[in-house]
Length: 230
Image (tube, rainbow, N blue to C red):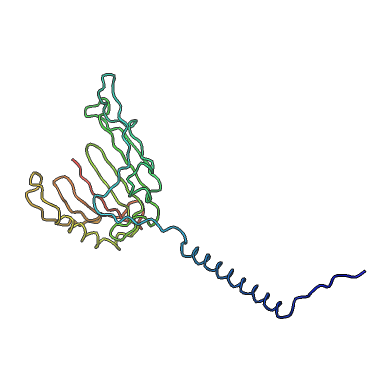
């Protein structure tokens, strides 16, 4: 029996084939490098922008759910008619900054006894680290304390009072000087700074103003506040 003769590839043919394989490997490596480079360029999503807070830029943190009597008249505001806002109910500028919101409410005794006619609320927004600044100091909490008789809105800054007091004093005076004078409240404004062991204060009306003081709960923090009281 005879077998068919098999023609073996020549050395030139083998060298050509090996060269082709080498070129193919180079092309594949280049493609993989391009894909890896593109992935590195994309990277993680960009961080949310930091809120640069100014005076009077406090968020709405309470949701009011009014109640009515049988005649359709709105009932006086009571603690049962309010709750802390959810994160998705906050202003869009604050949603990425606020981690959680905590609300406390207390009825105020009516004058001469009887049923409470008003409430006092303390609502605190705890901010995520690095999401808000005031005068370049990190803001870690926003505290809003309100009633019909007073209002005290605060930024809690992650900076010791001695380190930031001079910047705060300049800010309070500049804010006072830039504000228009309400002739019904003040005939003129001198923007004098009241200094005490408790902090600094600048009046902007006969009933209120802005002040800064050490945080009584944490010596490494400072409170910037705006408020009024009857």
